Length: 544
Image (cartoon, rainbow, N blue to C red; front, side, top):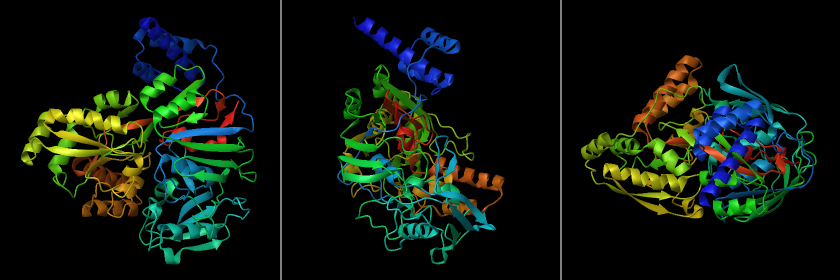
């Protein structure tokens, strides 16, 4: 009976994968990767490919005509009582999902990881990269009816760069010459820089820390943005409710009347809620869950190959990781392919401890394999044979705890004992966040210099490794000051070589974003950036 049950499940998986290809949501290459991960035989995969080539009937797809109205119910995990509606203070996916519904940035990365203007019509250097011009889109209003103007952009930059309490977006805006920031006219801002800043557009692509707020914005008052949904209610750690913005500047959007985002305790609860029809969409799932949900006829799954990272973070200013040989040994302990298979059910592709694989400057020559003998030699040279360390982990992103568990097992081969300390998300993001000696974190894809600004400079808001290297900072400044593309590429390769050989990150892989939806829903698709649920693009979600 068990054998028959597995055969039936494999038939369902094969049918589902065929439908995904026929609907245009999955390439044949992706089909082969997913089919292998699901355990389909070679002959079964061949049969599915043949069926795709021949065409065939597919169940209703997200390309069907959407209808207006209804309540979109979204589920995510990882929230807590410290959840926020402040668009410049968010830490979790839930925070970003809420902010992205209410507010909008000047620009963002789209599903293909390409820059896309939102509230800005144009952002360009004014003669040199020491001064930039931002031209805003006309006809945009805030939820209270006020027009979006240059004053709002200036106010937003001033709020984020407040020297008394700089916010998360302060690093990408760091070179802005705040006293001389000015408007040229109602919709144009002149942004002078204190240094040449060639990566300004790349830096703005970290849009989820740079939402534009109106002049006089007060986080203690009900939110007021330009986004597709207006605030109705919010209970931290539980639920938030938003309603359609009737004056949204994008004609015909959003489709749904109401958006409800519910915090769930864990991913198992998310899965159960979707199956029980308590929610319409759930994000940031685990691989094993996606495989199960793929067999449910009322569910569609989407696995997006992304540039997201969940790095292991080693504090370079504390023992034992203040010795570069220990950091090098830990990177060599990792069997990346085995970690991807065991911890992520195959939903990732191997990395080499450097971020930003979709950036054209990413050094594809960098490669790292497990080398236990060399790891042992490095540890012995550092006087750290039989090392015992504590790794703090939490279920804050896809596969974090599972990855930590696999690393613990792999480290034993090098004589290293890793004791896991598993904490809940509220503890992880509490006072000790960014100060754990050995831990993890997660980032969506961003261009390389934008990632550096967020986590690898002494002034970075998320410098978990406490990395501070004068030569590295000098290279970062040189890259921003260089207009010659070839020279800038070489400088960034030099920086990546430092990441590869000396840095405090272990980046074993780039992790897929795993989401699941009711078959009644349309308007979603894969996205390379890594934020769940089509980059929380709820304005395009609709019911069939």
